[in-house]
Length: 318
Ligand code: 8YV
Picture 1 (cartoon, protein in one colour):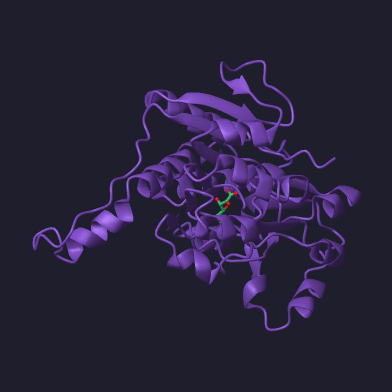
Picture 2 (cartoon, rainbow, N blue to C red; picture 1 turned 180 degrees about the vertical axis):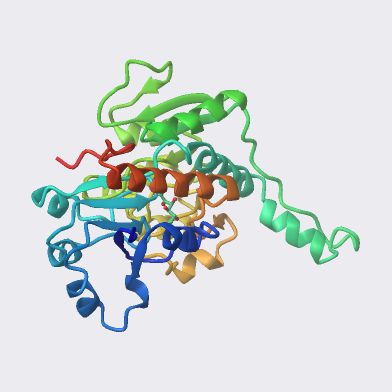
């Protein structure tokens, strides 16, 4: 029996063996390797399924060029880079990889928080450069994390995993969502500026896309203030990056732990110069275990689709 044809927008290289595993089961058109993308898409007019990732997305143009498209499978939980409106208009389903990455993304948020507050990158450098051994100065004192106030922007699945860890650190926890949750013991703050003012650490864990663009505005960052830390494991555009850089530079914001950026992989040079900032290259889900689990969710959705079963993790497209 011939393998079902799929279009793959970009490599899933961050999940070892994933590209080959897809090829084992499907007749894959690797769009990122096509010399002429448009021509490749025209030749894929019969294809019903696209596989993509949060980084590679899926534009309205790709959706339009595939008249038989029925499903977009996203290797990632966030689907802000997929044109959901265009998919909905055409009746194309979208799946993502929720839940399996909650713990690792929350772990990374914690790593960033502790790294920036306790100067872990600087301490590592201090030891490697033999400054400790040579009694060449001391590491600047850090800021206590345990027992502090933790504000969470977006108390969804990942936000909840972050909050759970905060309990272990004896933190007071409050959050901002569009609406208050009735199933959590944490304090709801309808006004994000109020939450920032209250917080020692403000962790951004909300969805990306138009609805949250620059939600963490200059005013929010100013309210967090010179002793406050902003942590972002969500999407870069959720924060007003220009304002954040300015405030970090002039001491009006205490520090930042950032996994995502407005124009990633481009990171503002000014951020790279700052001591009170820890930077990571969008790797919240990047552990062997989680990337494998994410790939399994993609495969399970593909197998469900091609055997006429219900999709496992469909995203609401309307
Ligand atoms: C990416 C992510 O999927 O799940 C998400 O929303 O941002 C990540 O897990 C991964 O970096 C590959 O694009």
